[in-house]
Image (cartoon, rainbow, N blue to C red; front, side, top):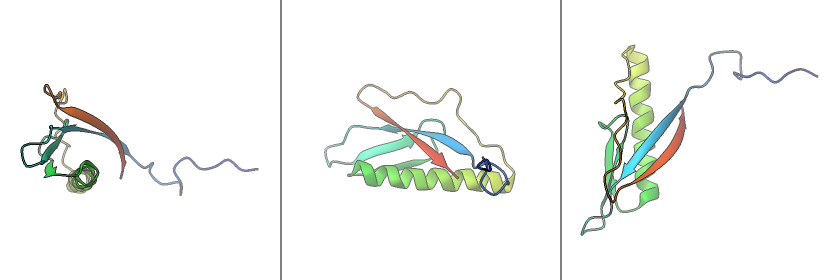
Length: 96
């Protein structure tokens, strides 16, 4: 019985990133604002949290791919931004 390969095809392992999203409480119009705690340049707004998180993850992946392909360092905010009073956070593992 052969061992299962860790990296799939023997190539580079698939990187996994921690996308921590900070969500504001809904405003008077029901809009929720979201931002990535470690890359605050990535933001989105919407009324449905699930849709908002999908957009944030899509933009997060696109930014990471762009940084990797250009050879630039990812400008992580360290330490990541903490949620303010009334805000919530979600942790989403993101595979590239």
